[in-house]
Amino acid sequence: MSNHQTKAAKISLVVSFCVLALKFTAYFYTNSTAILSDALETITNVVTAIVGLIVLKYALEPADENHPYGHGKLEYFSAAFEGGIILFAAFAIIFESIRTIIDGYDVKNISIGIGYVLAASVVNLVVGLYLIRVGKKQNSETLKAGGMHLLADVKTTAGVVLGLILYKVTGWQWVDPVIGILVGLWLGHESSQIIKRNIGGLLDETDLESVADLAKNISTHIKPGIIDIHNLRIIRSGSFHHIDAHIVVPEFWNIKIIHDLAHDFEKSVVNDYKFEGEFAFHTDPCHQHYCKNCDIASCPVRKSEFKAKRDLSAQHMIKGPQYTD
Image (cartoon, rainbow, N blue to C red; front, side):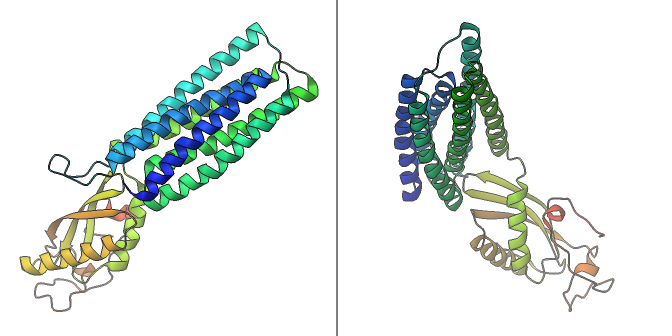
């Protein structure tokens, strides 16, 4: 496991316990359902921080005989699991808020409660931004999901504080549980986005952002003789990407020339790609379909003049063979 990722995961776990203590202290003083709902969400932070720390240990293990693509997909499982825990918390918060509306209660010591939850929110903001920064740098879905969750926690806490201020000013008892319900609905939305994004990773859903970034690298490092690239696919395994693609090369070239070209091309692209990766190329002979896109001057089988190189955009490369523009 990367030292940076380990450090970030441990910080997330310790901070989650501290924030949980602050919010339950605030609930003890105030008896506020909105604060309780915020504290219940923080319990999910603790659970997911523990899961994240365990998952990162195994997700960063190198590829082996039984796992030739590595263990990185565990990160998607971890993040999707986190989304599921948040969704469960959302339902619990909504249920408790509705029960409070029916049974009634009294909020007290509002100023003290606001002080505790604001302190917790500042801690979450700082650590959330830190986790996202490290997650992006290390290409860790687990850390990015954890950071996004903490920032979502900051937003819900802000709503709770505003609700408590409104309650204190107006004395409207219904404000506090209604804020709790709104917090639950917000968390339900956030959790669905986390689950959707990471199930997509488990199912190798096309990540247009990664494909676009790869397309830029390919365009930068394209070599003479690579006439076209299509059927590009990416299998994401955490920070490691396995890339399948068809490349069109001159039909009269021998296999050694094609092998050396593909090897050098792969090396230059991967070295400049933000993820670790490897290519698996299927080579297609041009069959004179691509003459107008081929700039090989000494071609002995050319049937039409060269006009322009292909624009190897992301959308173009994920499609199948295209003989005409």
